[in-house]
Image 1 (spheres, rainbow, N blue to C red):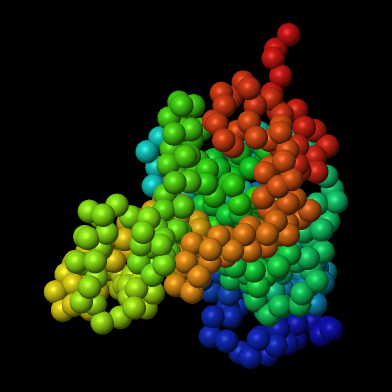
Image 2: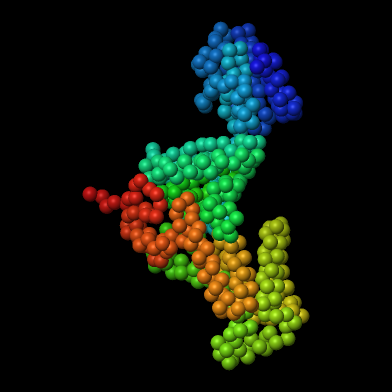
Length: 477
């Protein structure tokens, strides 16, 4: 390690390759000599001036140039820490200033918070309930949870991932509810990879999944603090990633994507009706194109005569087979969706509406697609967005079902469905079966699945999770 302050600072500057944003502020008075080092743009320079530099410059009598000697002089209210020369590199990169003085090297956390304000999340429209959404700053996200769960048992455990990005990761959980074994397993999985960088929570989801190559996701996610607070109270562990507005949580079961955060703010009967509506929409999106192909190719005798005549008149002059026609329509729908997402917002809206109408109408008039096929694809496309978190999975599965229906008809749909359900039954998320509470059946957890119960009936947390405290609600004595 270099011996004097000038050598230390110049050695650090050379270590970073003499970058233009590497800033050094000399602090030289009759009684003090030191240098404040920081990366311009990463720290709050105004606070550094007012809280650190000015008090040191104004001091007109001798004082010790150690951490303890300067505590009574500077006006900084944050956490000062004495570090080694080797630690100064990581400290600078994390957004702190480093003060080099004669007897110590002091880290001064002055991170400049730059980002958007807390607002309604763009991925989740809110009708009733809180309108706050997570942002890209991990401290703000932790505060949003702390504001909702004012409990001394709420733990935020911080780790660092990414050899080059040094990204802060926070694991949040209730220590008197969640088994410590779950937290240890999360840390083990995250630390079992030496990765260059972590820039979003989706990176963490891939590291945490039991089967990362599976079509089905095994990690839950949300952008809403009220949803994440509810998951923590249910006994789940939540993982935040600095720079990402999406929080992920484990364990996760597929039935959670059929629920909605606003179910808690509706009357139980209305919430129950909407849950069944979402299930019906998912089945409509998944099976309607395949059933239409199956009826045309194999089981046309199942249709009433009037409807059969309509189908024949609509599809009689199409040059493609029913299976190929449906696949073309589905792929065109996917292309149109991808294009509308990636175009500028206002252009994307025009492309989504006008493109669908123009392409559909033109394809029907040109005799390439039948009007019934366009209608079926449109109905399937509407239904698929009733469960937005499963859009990608349902989009692939419905193509598989169309192929199975074109090869074997209804029997192919049945076989394909059985294979998918059998595969899903083998999945798990941190020891919790993916199809819980249906496979295996767990009667106590069925309360809030098929029917939305009142809050006072849900006195236990999900029994399928590994919890140390399963009581959620008690009647006051």
